[in-house]
Image (tube, rainbow, N blue to C red):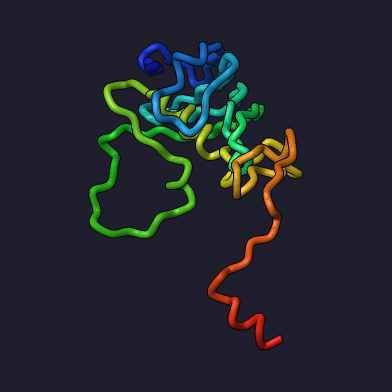
Length: 170
């Protein structure tokens, strides 16, 4: 999905569109998009510099890191990114990263890759350790039973045989 910048000649323009999940997601992503992706942006133009401001709404499906069951996470993220032409990309070997560099991207051939922008926003919103709920009990370490849906018959305590001689000291 490319945003053709030659179509936007006014200082401020609107871009409102709904994409289907298969238009945005790529194979190998850490999430699955399970709802239409609603994009509502204002495009601010200043000569060859652009600023995209708005929000994106959809629903992502993740795997719980404890029980490995899929769960849905609503996504409602704000976007505020400046785009400069790739010709302004600095080729200095070493320089300090300024605050404004963190929300600046570059475009080529008067095209902005919206797919890349959306995927970046999704990845930034992903939790480090996705959980289906805070009280998720996870899987039994012995038999692999999902402890949220049932119980297992495993012995809850495991003793390290290397520590057996220390038991005799008691």
